[in-house]
Image 1 (cartoon, rainbow, N blue to C red):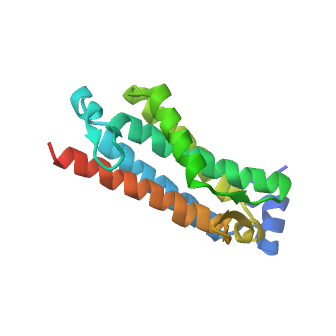
Image 2: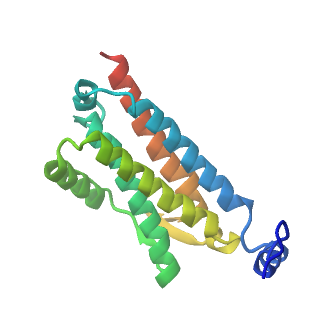
Length: 178
């Protein structure tokens, strides 16, 4: 049994071995901070604002919000698949564009509560995953595009963060445009 205030045996072994470290926590913080900022932008919006079409995407703002969650879901899935199989995800813009178009056709305008819940849930999923990854897992090549391999750490700290940032910029521009 654990003594209050003292790390468990597993925590001490993990700390000594360096298997799980701050890098995963930094990835987690990067995702959570960005999603918190995005949610802060989205929560106060009324229905008219939620329906505005973002010029960059051509979708209602509410669908763009859900799309960010879908991206986080896919990115977490690519890492999880690599953890199970050792295979890297071969990224395809054609596949991604088809998925996005199908999602836009099928979902249309997503209710604000549903979109925000989905966004938070998917952010929690990838953040929890990042915090559990060992340094070796963060360094693993899990993604490739045009024959260039990328690590799990890059996928979270660059690709996922860039995806959030780009869509958040688009949402802000749409809101500023009146």
